[in-house]
Amino acid sequence: MKPLSGDPIRVLAVDDDPAALRLVSRVLSSAGYKVTAVDNGNAAIEEIRATCPDILVCDWEMPEMDGLELCRVIRQEKLPQYLYILLLTARSLTKDMIIGLES
Image (cartoon, rainbow, N blue to C red; front, side, top):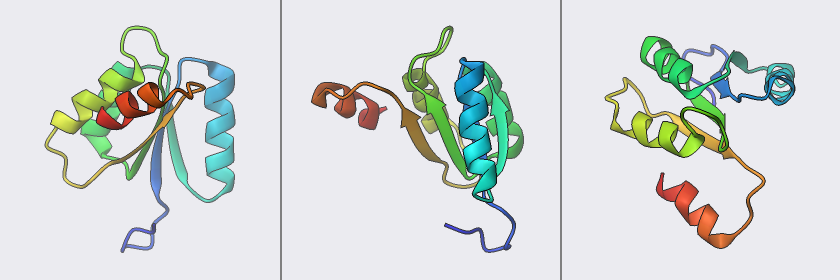
C-alpha cells in the first residue's frame, strides 16, 4: 500500500508498554513507514482526528481505553480516508478473534 502522492505511509502506533511501543515503532520506521507513537487510546483519537494516518497499529490490552474500544470509536468517526487497523494481541481463541474483527 503506497499513497498516490509517493509520500511514506503514515502509521500511528499505540501501546501503553514503552518497550513494545519502541519495538513496533523501530520495526515500522526501518521498513520505511512514517511512524507516530502514542501511549494511550485518548491520545490516539486526538492524533487520528488531527492527521488521519493511513494505518493504526494498536495493542488490545491498554488501561483507560483498550484497543477494542479505540477501534469502535474510530469506526464512528468521519475520517477523510479509510483507516486500516492492526490490533496486536497475544489472544488466540477464536472468540477473541471474532470480537477483534467485529470491533
